[in-house]
Length: 186
Image 1: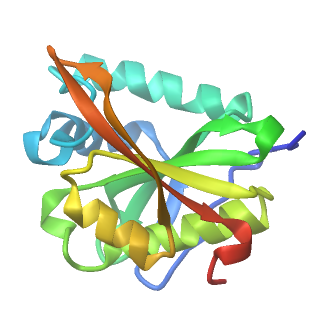
Image 2 (image 1 turned 45 degrees about the vertical axis):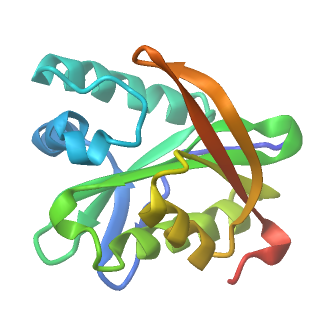
């Protein structure tokens, strides 16, 4: 069984980013992310209606870290020292040493390679320090940008499920991509 310990919280630096713990001061950025229809287009969760929704989220995020069941990091842009997105591992299957990665970025930072930079750093940490054997990503098949980013990191399509997910009054498809530690470019 995989033994995880997210304490002390692992901070990651890249050339342009700091991947750090989400803080109360990130409330406005989280609200922008979670209430923006462009950001949430392929994330099948309700839009945040108000800041209270985000306060509740900010209370839940540390639970995964404290229980070593999931870790969510703020993506901070080094130039501004402000949060611009979020990335993390959740649905960690300790028995099979597998975690699911998820990410989101403010629209004005898309197309700059920031998502790829954050993902590469998170994957390296997940495989090296957390000792994950594999990482999966559950992607809406219409999210071409996310699929390109995953494939750039070496992910391969593992499965395609037709109408396996019911959300907002309709059945949706899911594409599952995965990356093995042995295939990861270190």
